[in-house]
Amino acid sequence: MAYTIQNPLAGFQPIAVTDTTQNHALGTIVTATDPTYGTGEFIYLKGIASTAIGTMVDYDQYLGTTALSPATAGTGPVAVAMSANVALQYGWYQIDGAAVVKAPNAMVVGADVFSLAATPGSVDDAAVAGEQILNAKVSTTTGTPSTGFGVIQINRPFHQGQIT
Image (cartoon, rainbow, N blue to C red):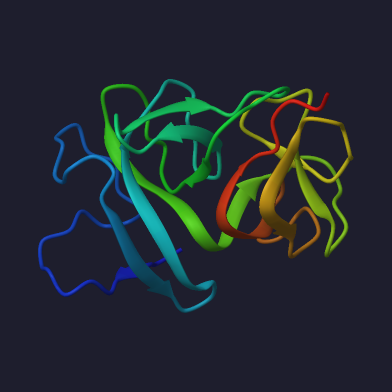
């Protein structure tokens, strides 16, 4: 992925780069384009342990923090890591556009997106109450662009939350 930031200010940390130095205000949002995946929006956040490219995280825009999206019962907004942005590092997370996300199981194009019960930070299309990621749809089958990944279309996605 070779996203180019489109905002008029210069000096942005590249989308796919992780840095041990905080280069922007946490919660900063930019628009960037990629020749394959098109235009997307990205938020600048602090990393968490076990974050790999394509990991889905829960985030707090005000605090600028992340946590691996839980396998069950998540709440709040989610984003997709654009780098292996681990603890004590800073990087970009996708919140809008065609996102390459960890998806180890087969998915059907056009299906709803759910947290994968067996693997925090990954997604699936198996319907489980309380695990749906709203504002997200499956765009490709698993294995695109590579093994263990899929493309989902997102628009500021968030967890469905508790079902009562």
